[in-house]
Figure 1 (cartoon, rainbow, N blue to C red):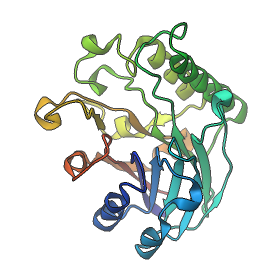
Figure 2 (cartoon, rainbow, N blue to C red):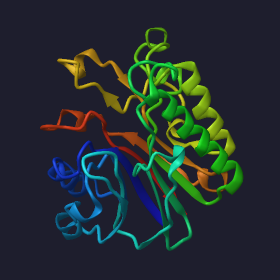
Figure 3 (cartoon, rainbow, N blue to C red):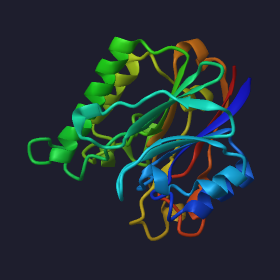
Length: 262
């Protein structure tokens, strides 16, 4: 079975219902994972999505904050969730496809503005979240799994517009990069996007604060698709849909795609 998967921090699924529907109609991924839905599950506008063929949904929601959803044209079943860092946030949900592949949809905390857990509680929560992810992967030894989401870290030097300028900026600090690497290594996860596109600058996020995001191009690759080694070689066709950042009233993130032949 071949299927295409996309991940997108939508920054309010209700506000941007039309953009989600446009992506579904234009690109038609078989599975679409959304983060920062900012909606209780029962208020996610599923009717339009179902009309476009996305008949299945597994989601966790909160009013106004966080929230993750997996929308699918393919049958899937709920495979649970984890409350990493025990914050009580809707930041993880998993679903299982009929072929047994488990998809994990994650929204790692952004971490605030100051990269110091002693003065910034949010930064400490982010590091704790990643540590809990690491420990869970060590315990579970995930197989036949895909992990996607807004992981809120750009790990490589060419995942940011200026490595040196961002070394003390949350999302690219050495301690965050190290924590993410530990989580990735614990599950033996393969970075599918960089497996397909090993060289060159790649970004999936551009700040709202930039008056001309496209010309300035001060981006970061915060959104990721990982796969366990047993299925990572089945992945191909990775791409990041940069033009989506220029849609009307866009999210500051754009969708990341990969196709799996399984």
